[in-house]
Length: 484
Image 1 (cartoon, rainbow, N blue to C red):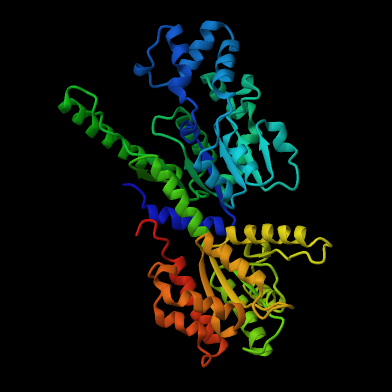
Image 2 (cartoon, rainbow, N blue to C red):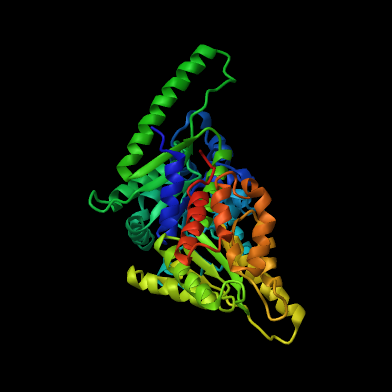
């Protein structure tokens, strides 16, 4: 039975939020970009040795037969170089992956699509394609990419034939050991593999030897359902073959559970994109950007503002949200104090995993350059979040802060859920009034007008106000709209 898409998204996002998620990427992720699959790669080679790939199931063996017939693999290396040393652009799936907060990615692919996408996103990546690189990792990287079957830059070392697979555990012990560690410490999502993928079948043999029944951890895979071959002239025979394939597929899905892999079946590969988009959105909705500044306190009072921000920081952490802040004056420092106190009381030692602070540099001497840097920081913070809470918002020169209004506009343009705490006055009050006539549109009909009205209710205390903020955040974050 296919694993629920909603459960896949929910459970994998939970692993991401805990810093325990990893990806394993197969050839199916590269095909939409223009690269050939195994059959496309080996078809000419098979014909040279008198084999028909439409009648062959063990393509790794075909590669070995070809090498045997040629005495060495020089010709196969040329084929690999010709087919994979091309400048194809990463797909939308690669781009989404590059934005996810995942530090460890494994792949059996030889191309450079995933590392190209990650570099384009601005992240620092370390590519590990041989065992010696595992032994000497570099510091300061955002992503580790393990190319366990090699890189097209050195085709002679690519894992492709039976001899390569059979000697893998002996010749690539460090890769094997590293994968073993991560399989028990990370939750993997397998993407781009099919039920007939030779890489998957050989790799599962490795996984079984690496995992004992005592240390298994849940993993996930997305694969396409078997399809009816409408091109066959004999429709009855086509339906019988399809029924057989469905039964075999169900048995395969059941067999993958031996490796603790829960398989989600999709009708088309386009659904993979939708699932990845849902994962990205659901992850963002657990990240709350807090915008605001308070140069004056006329409308809500300094003591009440500080109490609200301190307790909001605690409440967001307690509710498993990650806080993102640019440390606005008299807002950010109090918010962060509350968050850190709650993290310590919950015995959460990894503060960076729950709190992202991006202070704005001031007095750089060039107002234009300073604004560019501020906007870059704002874009980075808001892009990582799914919810923006706006508190007060005044500046030295204006009662309504231009910076807070800029953050509101950015959040609105990026489709974030915005929670303006209107009762705190100034920019927050102004934004509350702008949004109030169309709250159904702003919150996708998930928040009632009565709840929204309470954001501007001066008769409730700060704890009740925090309950309102959390109520709205929970309503939008618990319903991503992906598969409801």
